[in-house]
Image (cartoon, rainbow, N blue to C red; front, side):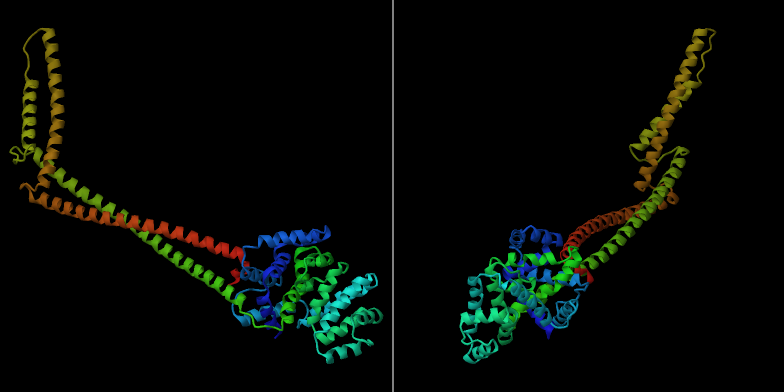
Length: 472
């Protein structure tokens, strides 16, 4: 039941008070709190933090506060989107204070306040004491005559007036007197006492009662509370836990425990769902990336295989063309395939003519004529070699043309050439298909990686904003 009330109380905390509590527990470090309190600058520092939180929703601030409390007590936040799990987490928060119920935490802070009031009561001016007594009397006047009579008898007051109440508090002791009020009116009297004490500006208020205050002087009134904590951040945050629990719970208790919508559970459920969706999508993208990379590797391997096949077919074409070339070099009567036949025949005629000229000898005794004849023969020999090279190239082209145009000559050469050519066309088409798929898969991989990086950034931002979400 206590944990259920805590859940309801955290859901009910809102507005400026929520932002104040969040600022002091989450936003401000221990050194910030201690230093600001020491220098009497806490109010300005907290106002600055509250102003910065103006754009944040109550849902977000409320959740961050609870998550910070869980983190301080080393709890996981896996399933606090469900009410039973959140209640269990709140029960553990309460257990971290050393108590199993909330009332002892309230009583402890209440005793601190009464002791402060007792110590300062005699130093208060008559007007200040009268102010507190009148506030208490006015509140008691709202109850039935029977209740007031019981209070009058308990305090042994001759009459039920504010003056007699002040006198009773002074004579019987503030602690005993206000305890009687507490006994009669319950925790509802706490807010009245806290706010009436704040007005006199001479008494420190326990941090636990901060959310009960409705005065602009509230921060100043609780400022000295931070000076009683150890400065070490984790120790201070852990020591503040009882006060934070009371801050959340007391307004809810005083409001008679109204039913509150499950803001925390609903909001966290939305975040968890979004986080889980992103994580699942990342996993799917990882699988897609692996599949696509495998496809790319297979296509790359296929490209290598097809390149090898293409090279084999080219070698077959070259082998058939070389074989036909060799046949053509020994064939006197060439088939008619223009312009190759005419070109080859002309080159053959030129070579024959130059060879005849080269073999012609000059019968003379003149040294000059002999030198001239030797030079001519060298020129003819050079021209013959050039013509022979040209003839080789012309025959090579003729052989390829004959095979490509399937000129009847030698079926033993034509058939393998035609088959190799057909295979080459098929391999080239397959190569193009593979190349197109490789481009598609590469683009798909680029898109997957870009999408993965965007989602990964979103997951990182969520995990940074809600560190405990990593426990999911």
